[in-house]
Image 1: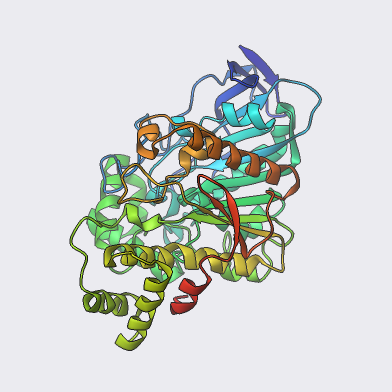
Image 2: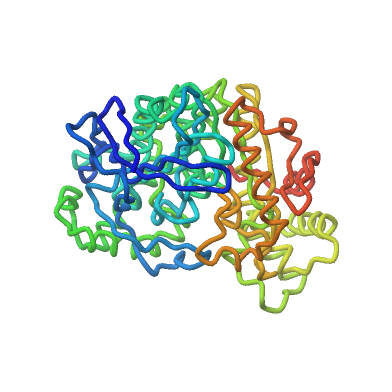
Length: 483
């Protein structure tokens, strides 16, 4: 047992042994309480000593949906709508140091996931790199990202939660040996999206010094019209005519309707209808526009992806289609004519020698959905602060998946647990690559430089990590600008 006194109150945590050193761990620290569709209420102080030895409940979320089980480590713990706003701290031994702080937001399409998942355990990272590491829950799905301003609620509850968590870090992290002036935020997938939207929000200004976006850059930010369509879709599933009635819907029924409405909205809104939106308060513009206007001026950023992001979501096992059929698919998907589509396919054929049409389609799909947005965000931030690019290329054991979306998760923390070791084929080289990523992220947290040149130079994290010059230039230049 280890105890610590913070400005908010006293906490009793535990200690764990790692190969590097002993680490103090404080789990389930409540930073705010959640009122349905309301802004988070900060937990400012308490009397006595609070136990911080067990993870807190996660945000309510669906189980068994289309995203469940795509990669290892699906969340299976307890949830609580009102008590889910907790965070966890891993801190090296108590001394007078002021260490860099890394704050992690978990992913899961803004609808699933939790900071308590074993892959996110911060003990190894904190001990090995001599940093303070924090992982945070935030509200998910309709509870986190439904626009209920028409019913007296607010928009962007999940982003507001993240801001409240960062305010807690600002006010308390010095007690754990962290430096509140050297806080970096990072996250993967929706967690990376959270980081990107925090960079776009004026309400988060000054709460962090650096940002790492792992596979989280998209053009999916909702405008008010899109958010209204999402709200209407949820009301339809619940057979309700008034948003004010949502406050009384049992949470399980709300989550069930959320999943059903997401499927119904797929063709009009896209894969993640419960998503941050431009509300005029938390967000006055989508990230690309906000960054270009200087919303994160002076903030160093790392923005990268895996090399084969969308292979996780496409079936590449069938017979490769004929080139003409592939060209027609590309024309429909990108909105170009047949001649332009053929030129695009020719570029991909030259860039991917020997690849069949299934592999070309998966790569193009990845480029449009993930690589183009990442490049746009880097371009928007350049001129306002240092920007670094990376590609993560370690492939899954299943060759059809390649270096798919999410495969970097166990490498970030060095936790090849819950089936991840088998999924990635973890060997000595994998563990070495994992260490290289933590070295880079910790260096970035210390001084804003991960150890390679700024974009368009790109670090390729593979069995041998190398820096290359703008490796996707030709492919992305061949595509129409979708946003």
